[in-house]
Image 1 (cartoon, chains in turn yellow, cyan):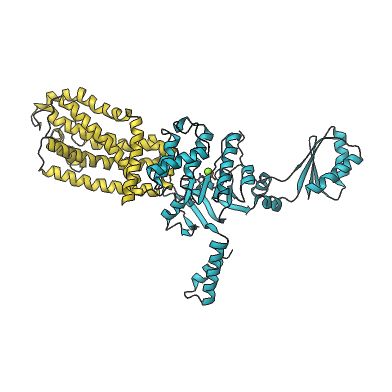
Image 2 (cartoon, helix red, strand yellow):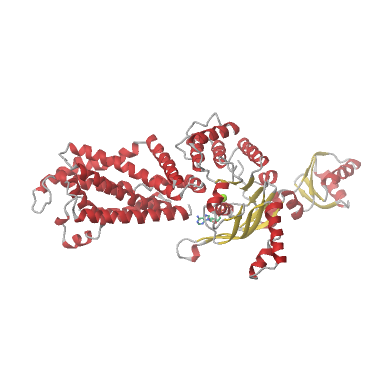
Length: 254
Length: 357
Ligand SMILES: Nc1ncnc2c1ncn2[C@@H]1O[C@H](COP(=O)(O)OP(=O)(O)O)[C@@H](O)[C@H]1O
Ligand SMILES: [Mg+2]
């Protein structure tokens, strides 16, 4: 157990050290949400008054969704960070050492999680200037949900990177899955605006629950079924995807 | 070796006292007297891509070899022969499709952790984290083998001094030359003083100076008692460094022995090459020498005369005296022993792809 903790710490520290050398990536990942905040949220102003719109203010509707969106896109691209490490033999060098395999996996995943939490905090701070006023406890829980989403998607992304070892392939696989999941999660516009079929499909999308939960949480409404469902779903998903990544890490022919 | 005994006994459920005694003797022989540290039996590896069988590659086709404590064992073969695959299996990176492997008494299928603690591996690609410095790479490696921060720093410093890497140790690894990278790869591989060190093409693509630096370090490690398994497609490297060489081609070991023995075994005799001033003396010499009993064969190539003999050392004075008696003057003379290249060519019908830098 002690070795496991030390190993995880060593790998995570190494990953963060490399990241701090090049903090550029943290900010690149912020570009998209900030552009949405500046250029898309104003559009929503006109829609807020439309019949059936669930929230009174655009920021209360859009900012929680934006945080989930950032988690979706940025975590699912974490696999790109290991492609060169796979290529130059660094991962293989790690795998020859007696380092704990779970530590190896957690080191990479936690690095993605930390980056994402920093990005989420920055988005929240910027949003304050756009009239976003979240509940504090709700926000802490929302970050916890974001953490679970980040574990899930970065584990998937790393695993695919290990399996395909190719940037182009990784990008197409990720886009193929993440884009529809994103559009069907009600981040951009309320799902109540969508046709019944789309609403039906959205009900089997775990991110729909995450997005709805994120809105409840930022409003401070914690004891909601949706919130509970979202947490249960993503706890299960993060365990399953972590296990997948561990298996890939153990067996993959790099 | 005595490997057959335990296998035959495994078939009969209750071994007799005599049989048990045999096992003890054979085990003693294997692990103590002969000090076998690596035992590979019928190793096979098939890379299957997807479900289609047609796409799968049989990279290693059932190879056997043992490595004794303290030797430098070479796997020699052209690109695609299966050298890297074999090493990666031995280093616990990929699992074999078939066969048994025992390293330092540990069954590879079960005791991967124990094996990892005792081996070092320098892959073909190296594996430095290029955005970190050489020293940081070494410290990380030491930490992963369980050293504390201070121990790791000391060990990194020790190796940097020992291998004379001070002048570039604190530069980012991406600025290193090929030779500098390789020296750091090697240092990372020996950070935990492994009992067995695997080196995958440690010198490929390097300039002669860097190559000899690496060779020196490998020789030093060998002198310190490390068992070394290296792959190469440089013949002279295998020839100079290795106590035994397995010539591997298309996933199979075609020959395995001491390099000198291999050359004797496959190609008997030496070659005396004479360079004449003119064609007439060449013709005359050819005629005279071919009637001598110590000459096995004669071949003319341009102005060169290749004289194949059994014992070059004793034949050379005889050749010279024949030429001298007949007043035939030569420009140069050289005595060459067969190279592993000749051996490889004879065994496989193909040449090793030797990239000349
Ligand atoms: N991960 C892999 N997937 C599929 N085929 C592979 C893989 N690694 C190696 N091979 C194939 O196995 C054969 C042996 O390769 P390798 O062991 O790298 O040879 P060497 O190191 O002797 O040059 C080659 O035909 C190579 O293409
Ligand atoms: Mg190779």
